[in-house]
Image (cartoon, rainbow, N blue to C red; front, side):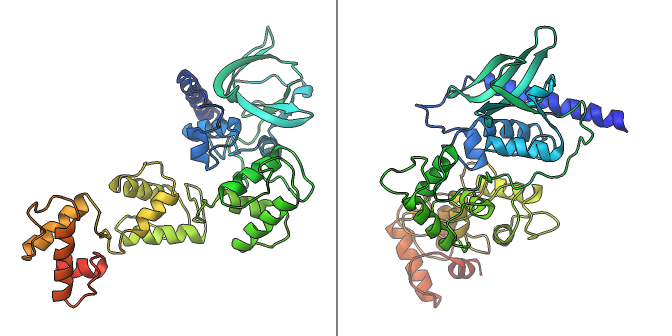
Amino acid sequence: METSTIFTLTNEISNFINVAKQELATGFTEHNGDNMTKYGAWYGLNGQPWCAMFVSWCANQAGILGTVVPKYAYCPYGVNAYENWGRYRRRTSGYEPEQGDVIFFQQDGVACHTGIVIQYNSSSKIVTTIEGNSRDAIRSNTYNLTDSYILGYGIWSGSNTNPSPSPTPDPNPVTLLRLGSQGEAVRNLQTILISKGYNCGASGADGDFGQATYNAVIRFQADHGLEQDGIVGPKTWNALNNTTAGGTPVLRKGSTGADVVKLQKALIARGYSCGASGADGDFGQGTYNAVIKFQADHGLDQDGIVGPQTWNALSNTSGDGSTLLRKGDRGDGVVALQKALIAKGYSCGTSGADGIFGDGTYNAVIRFQANNGLDQDGIVGPATWRALNN
């Protein structure tokens, strides 16, 4: 059994390395250092430094995220996760890395950058890596084993006795920040607050947790039902990283809770199965598949992430699966509406069922609603669809 486990894990690590190599081959480089990447978009922190999100994305593609590699966007959190698993080795311990280990780099003893070990030459003591956000790009770099820039390694094998460690804790950054804090973590906090409409003062994201940032945190906490203490701990970080600028939750595979139940009920009401467990509050594979199908049916990016556009599309379809239509809309839904109206003797104009909800279709809807005792608002919602389908 042990041999089988090690063999399977080796294949997964090989996939991890190959995913990184494929991304390296794309030659990706940021545009003007803006930190806008598909890795950040996947994680939900686009526009933020992305070395750790690159490692997490590659692990997710290889199917080892949360078991072999933790999900992290903040390098010190990655180190903490490996330490909790008993699978962290400091450079100063004399550990020699293996392919597939995660490498951490330091500044003043604090993890500041991360990447993936793709090769280690035990003769020359040279470590070869692939790193995201290395001079604003994906790059392969080499280091001497004793290079002081290396902090340590998150390992997957060797002395590891737990190839399937316990689930990763909360993947969001957990740096405790308060009035007087300074540095990159504060700058990250301020950037997120500003993106959500909370003013951090005239200096913006300056890395200094002053009174204006404190006030912004208090307002954010009040708006999200959190304790208003001005301290940014796990609950505040979680709320910051799981809401959009408009306040809707960003949900993805692995999310849990009441917002997932709400999503699942909306999908099920529209004919999208979330799996045998139904609306159980667990965003698993069944819910992911339902989201992908809904996104495909509504012309959205099929990323499986429920953000503002997907929530908007869900809110603009009725509970019976029919689309809410109004003047100005276009597409197959309008064609279906026009054909139903024409079949019942309501002219939609000389163009017929052309897929454009113009004046002719609007007038037809108003007449149909009047003749069927409905509100004459020209909007085709559940009541109008039911009358058309009867």
